[in-house]
Image (tube, rainbow, N blue to C red; front, side, top):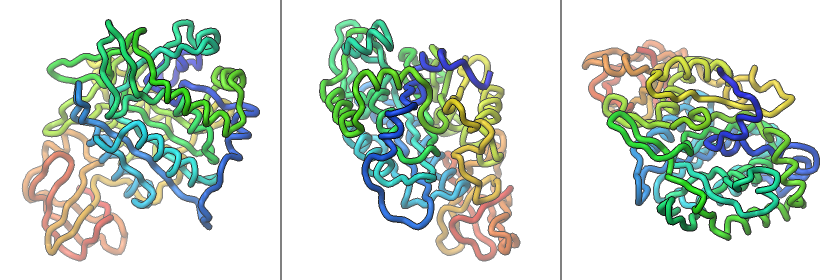
Amino acid sequence: MSRISRRHFFQFASSTLATLGISQLKFLSQAENYGKVLAQSTSRKLALLVGINEYENQPLRGCVNDIAMQYYLLNHRFGFNPKDIVILTNKKATRQGILEAFEEHLVKQAKPGDVVVFNYSGHGSYVIDSDPIIKAFIDPKGLSGTLVPVDSSFPNPETGGVVDDIMGHTLFILTSALKTENFTGILDSCFAGMTTKEEYTVRSRPSGEKIKITPQEKVYQEKWLSRLDISKDEFVKGYQSGIAKGVFFAACQPLQLSKEVKILDFYSGIFSYLFTQYLWQETGTPETVIKYLNKQIPPRFRQDPLYEFKAGTKLDSQTIFLTENSNPVADAVVTEVKGDKAKIWLGGLNVKQIDGLTTGAIFNVIYPPEKTTAKLTFESRQGLAARATIKGNIEPGFLLRI
């Protein structure tokens, strides 16, 4: 199914932002009045992309590739200005770095009507929230889904410990403070346990009821609730009420595993690769893209992506990222030109097409339309980055078809 019931979606911790439902009444109205934004005459498209491979324990291999795929998609397919895309990878993706970037780049800058995207690829986990109100009204065990920054720890779930994770509560408070409804969250992580097999790695740090969140995380939440003039009771009521902003995508269903795999000669989250490749080729809605992904992911992986959107809206009928496509569908894009050589990004090709590329294959320019006589001759490839020889006047940003 492309969607699940709201009750089950709340139980799905890997969709951290989407599961936390502070959306109604006082909370959202006050959140929208928070802070000041930069003066600007036109709407903007802002993105924060986070990908972490270099964990000290249980490193991953495909998260930075996920972010590269998303960057080229947003920039060249959906018209995001590179200056409005903040990327945090590996050592830069600390707890403080992620929170500061969300505040400074998204909360403080987004105006009503702007488009905002947050993409996270990395480990997810569970922690214990000892707050009695949370236990009484949210989860009897106090379990809360988290994202695992690069500087968080990996304690033994049997003996327990304190971690510097970013709780879903925290991320949702920040998301609710955005002054635009046009928000898209994309999370390629899970909380079903760490598993490594020959054909995939799971993006989840082992968790348990003895793993606790650092006190500074709760202080941070309280600071923001105070800024927004929201009481703890109001927070809990909002949490239970529904999705707050836009649309949220998650890599898998509850208790399933979000997997990264080797695709030809590079690693990626299988969800992230198929998600971005599809959107190079289609003007998709949340429903159509999820249907496509669920058909494409092999049944043996037991991974069924899902989405959820704010109750009472019709976001399921709108295009991805809630923005009109500024460029046509394409197989590839020119990213760099030096002399008669070019680098091209093969984000729109499927695995079979990439694997079938041979020296001498021709890429034709399809955009801009006045340059369609120009061509590129394929030479070599590493991952999704290729080299080609130019014939005609070629510039970075030109879209290609093979």
